[in-house]
Each structure stands twice: as C-alpha cells, then as structure tokens.
Image 1 (tube, rainbow, N blue to C red):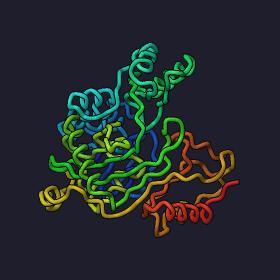
Image 2: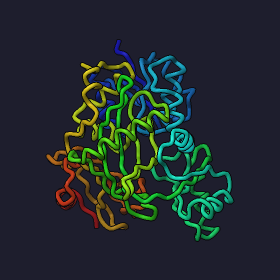
Image 3: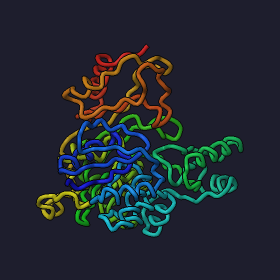
Image 4: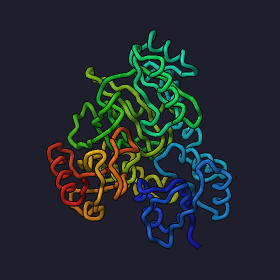
Length: 406
C-alpha cells in the first residue's frame, strides 16, 4: 500500500508540487472548498471541505494514516497543515512560524525587536487610532488587516481624508480579516522587491529576487514581476543579508521563505512582510525552480521527510545565490473592461516555447472586469524572458493569436 499525503487547499498554483509528490509514489488526498487541480491520476483524490474544519482534517489524517501534511501557498492552509502536523507528531515546518506568517503585527513587533528597518507602525483598535497615527506619526499610511491575503482589505490613507473615507477603509479592512485585527503603517515609497529563499537543513538559500511593477492608489495592484539573472552583486548581497536577518528575527527554521521589501532611492530595504511559505501564482512550485535551476519541490518534500535531496550538504554549502534563468510573471489585459471574452486557448498559449505557465482568471462568455485588485485580474502568464520590450511583444502576439474579446 502506498504512503499517503494530506494536501491542504490544493489548487492550480501548487499543481507542480502535487505532481512531484505523485511522481515520488505518494497517494495524495487533496482537501479544500474547490478543486482547480487538473490532474487525472489514480494517485490523487480530492475531498471537499472547509479549511477551518480542523476536526474533518484530523479525521482524514488518521483515516489515511498520512506520512505528512502539506499545504499550498496560502497562510491559512499553512496554519492548518502545521497545527495538525505538530499535533500528530508529523514532519512540521513549525506551528509558531505558521502563526507568525498569519500575523503582520507580530512580524512587525519581532522585526522591531531585532532592529530590522521597516515602516513606522501601530496596531489599530479604533477609528481614533487611525486619526492619531495620520496626524502625529505619518501623514500617509497603509491601513491593512494583519491576516488578509495579498492586497485584499488594504487602503492608502492621508491626514486630509474625510471621516467617511476612513470609516469605509476601516470597514473594508475588517471585512478582509478573519481575526478582525488591523494595523496601520507608514507609507514608504520605493521599488517593491520579492526576495524568495528556502531554509534547507537549517541553512538559507536565496532562490530569486524579483522587481514588481505596480499601479493604482497606493500601488496595490501588481501588473508585472521581473526575475533577472543579471542583478548587481551588491543588491544580491544586500538582499541575502536582509533576508537572513528577517528570517532570524521571525524564528523561521524550515521550508519556503517569501519576503516582500521596499528598496528606496537611498538603497535602503524596508520590510513589508515575510511568510514561512512559498509565493502564489506559480511562484514557489514553478517559477522559482525554473529561475534557480534547483529542484525546489524536492527540497520542500525533504523538509516534510517525503523525499531525500541528493548531496544536501553540498547544495547548502555552495549555493547562496542560484538565479540562472530570466523570467517574468505578467497579468495582461485581455480587452477593455465590459467586453465579452469569447476565446482563450489555454493549451496553445501554454505550448508556446516562450511560455512557462498560464492561467485564465475570467470566464469565457462573461464580460471582462476592471483590473482593480488581485481577484479582478484577467489572466496570468509566466514568460521565459525579463526584457520589457520582448515581453510586451510576446504577450501581444499571444493575446491577438489565441484570445478574442469584443
């Protein structure tokens, strides 16, 4: 009988990791509200359920006598997998680390204790806390939930905003916080970098550094993410040292590290947030393995004791910066908002030699939305290139050739 893995919240984002478990001869039981995994395998079964239903998850883990509990690139499923892993004495990335990943206020506090450079901040309990911060600490600030996904629930505020605008921002943040806990932090202008690493055998490996292009009020909507192999050595060294300091301050010890930081004009890095999980939208299980030329999925399986990485000590000792390939993650518009999307040929786009991965977020036969935040994006494409002009040319060709909206 094959050993079993319970995979919390499986989706198209983590499909490459799920395939890696199956290729390693594991039977994977996926658990979540939706099943967007396009796998036709006798070694995969999906069971529908709520991620908050820990009783159901516990019962499944015992029923299938699972060897490990894994999760996708979501803080909520990370919390479920690591809570239950610790409870059942299974390989665990750290229950406390998962809790810190789910709490931006806790991250801010721990980073502050370690003198990590970050925006000024304050926990928010009331409307008056927001007004006091805007008038006495920072005239522009971001109000955000401590435990939301991506940019959901975040609003840029200023000292000149009306009470009704602040009321709306407060309600928006509360609506997107499972714990109903909020924080406000100083708005820092700069380039938003994603610094991804992996803690293998207790040592930090720097997998990838990416620069984000953002639009909208408060620059909350990411339109392009560039992974370049020809980064300046001083930026690589600075990013590694920064990430190492952040990881140490937060107490992370195993697995994926997904960190966001702002690089200011004075070349200072400011911490935005850092999670003990991989990045979403193909990042951890598809982009980072391609960019770094490392088998990152096997590295994760190694930490869950489901696979053995060959020459693990030599990987840890010799690799600090492993970016060898260029790539970009883009979110192009498929037409004008309100136009109906009639065609999107996923397979033909995916099979193009310049494409690593693709995902349609809108529905064929429905009007296209205004791309105002993450959930309203039209699609995602991973291109094997980081040159702006060439990316634009490839995306235009793919959209004109394989999609149609009017």
